[in-house]
Length: 355
Ligand code: PMP
Image (tube, rainbow, N blue to C red; front, top):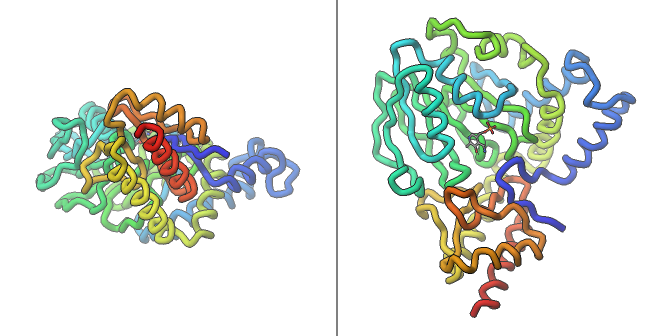
């Protein structure tokens, strides 16, 4: 048995893989593969409608916020957000908390003026800056809710006098959020929502169409909203698998239930990192992510042998990102407490071996 701690694309529930595999051969007893049916067929329209309904229900998305399933990954949203929300001559405020936040800033600068309200680049992004102020004349304020690479997370929605935009790629659906607090939320699906290839966007309708910019339709949220995410051919299979995964989450009891599990999983792993003298966490304790747990060995020479032991125990995807080093255990929704316990056991076994 393998436990997959990969950062994304990542683990999804086994039953989701199995049902998706069946649908590739014969979708809903149609005698056709999910891969060959028209996106305009009534069968796929039902999939799209249910996926949207599940997102609306699981995240309690209020009336007045549209839900979109787009292509191009979260990286396309780095550009689409300023294209749609930043008027010519205006400025946007950004919080710089890591690689993805910096990329979002870089792209926004190509569209207009950007004010970086705070950055933790001075400490290799090991913490979330606090006590900054968002300028009242910004068009919006953007932050990354979970920093997949550096293992930090923002649990409280920042105070902002202007609409808040959040990249929630790596913690969407892992904990309760109040969608009404946000002007726009986006997330590449490939962590907690589904496979790679679809990007979720939740946007407050009243913010759109206000910049005076003429955009290519494909980069304009409004045509996508008007067409129910079918302005062009949507990523049919990624949406279908997301639907299966959202059904799984709903059957489990939804976001509140998974949040409690995620709290226990993260606590179990951080407790071992703090207790075990061979390991050290890299993120500031108050900002530790519940999704991506970053840690190193105190002795650099222990790194390779620990990875080897982990591999022998079926623990895969633990190698840290090159900008942090060490290890990163991504413990997304589908990674069970059994997987976390297996990692903790391996850490304790390694401690025994190195006494
Ligand atoms: N934002 C965050 C927080 C991410 O973790 C990632 C990818 N891991 C991205 C953006 C980029 O997403 P994509 O590859 O879907 O463009």
